[in-house]
Structure formats: C-alpha cells, structure tokens
Image (tube, rainbow, N blue to C red; front, side, top):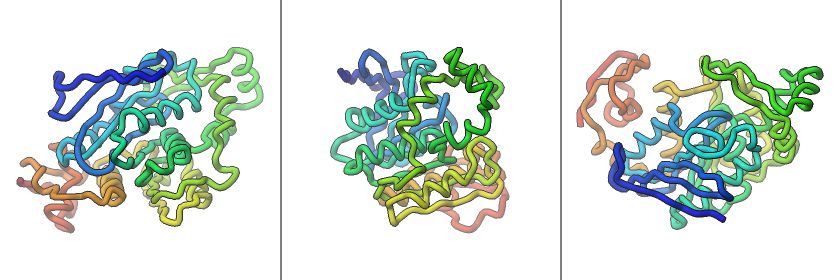
Length: 309
C-alpha cells in the first residue's frame, strides 16, 4: 500500500512547496516537493547520503528561484525517512525511487533524474523501469555496480567471510562521522541489479560528470556506462581536479546547465536573480552563483564582481 501525506506552508516553506511522507508498506519516505514549470527534476542521493546534502539543497534553491518542478527525498534508513539502514537493499531503494516518480511527481510532466554516486546507479535502473516518464538523466560520479567494481577490491576473502558471518560490517566514513554500515544482505541483493555486463537500455538523453581524482568511484565506471548506454544522445564530462563530491560552485554551474539543457524550459532566469556578490574561486556570498554566466557571460576571470537584479 502506498499512501501520500503532505503538508504545505510550514516553517521555511515557500508557496507551492510541500514536505511530507510517501508511505510504502509501512515505511515512510520523506520528501520535499516544489511545484513549478517544466519537467520535474528528481534528485537521487548516494549511499548513506540524506536529501539535505549540498547538491540537493543547491538544486532546491535553484528550483525556488527559477520556478521549476523539483523533488528530493530520503531513501528508507536515510535522513528523515523511517526504517533501518541495515535492513534495506538496493532493490528497495529503487522501488522507493520509482514510487516517487509514480506518486509524488506530477503525472502530466516528464522527469529529469539526477543521480549522485549510488544514486546514479539507481537513476539508471529507474530510467529502465519508467522509460516513458523520462525527459533526461544526469549522473554525478556514477556508482553503477559499485558493490562489484569498488568493493571487490576492498573486501578481501577474510572480510567477506566476516561479513557473511556477522551480517554487517562498518566502514570508516570519510566525512569523519559515524562509520557506514555494509550488510551481506545488501551486497548479495545488489547482484540482481548489475548493469555493466550488458547493454543499458536507457534511450533518453544522458549527461554524465565524473572527477578524475575520485577516490571512491573511479571515473572508468562512467566511461563503461557511456559505452553501454542505448541512448545516442549521451555525453561524459571529466573534471580534471574533481573528486567524488563534485559540489563546488563550478560543479554546480555544470550540473544546472545540464539540467536546464535537458529540460529545454530555461525561461527568464534574469528576473529571479537577487542582489549579491560572487567570488568564482568558490567563496560564494549568495545562493545565486550559478547564474553568473546569464548576466555576464565570459566576464568572470576568477575575480569577485557584483550581480544585480
């Protein structure tokens, strides 16, 4: 059973903005939804990454100020959603993603899926399940098949034996917070969803970004995905100094430009700009750094300059 319960107009919410829960079999999936125009952009987060992450929050601000349809959500066991992280599987998170497409997104609009890390894997799988709903797909540091490509080099035979025996192991978190669990159940179930062994039947336009300095998911994953995609309109941009997060102002410029290009509903962005200052070296003083190019294309030489509405 899927039950949709939402509330709007709460603290911190804008007109046409909702936050609520999508109930799937007793698990409540937290989401934020903005009603606007054009295709619905849906952000699919990474492994152990909640919906209030840097990229998802930047896209929320972009959608607010440009009047776009946008949804971000937490998988079960993440953020404000219910359920235990240790109980979940990749297939369960995929089902939650397709439920968001089916039950939260406006059925009259196509969707643009934006998948970060493991969310790239999930968004590719979701695109195969809902091909008629897709306007386009964007991946950031795509983690397709990471349980095989990445973990196979980390999980030595003794560690695999320990994981099978104990059911769960905890990996150090590079963010310096609590260790991240990895379960035998997740590892085994993920084998049902491997993509790199054959054609990836995604036919919509695809834009991929990957950092050459990514130490968590090698850029070769994105290259392999690109080679196996059915879509003839697919590109991969490699960022020489980019790591796994790809959440700097310059990274967000690329991401938003890709989304807007796929959406083909750019509209008058200049009207949405507030006064402020931008430092293109990354010390942004407002939330509007991605629109620098709209007002002053080619002007910035990595020097602060004013933006005016």
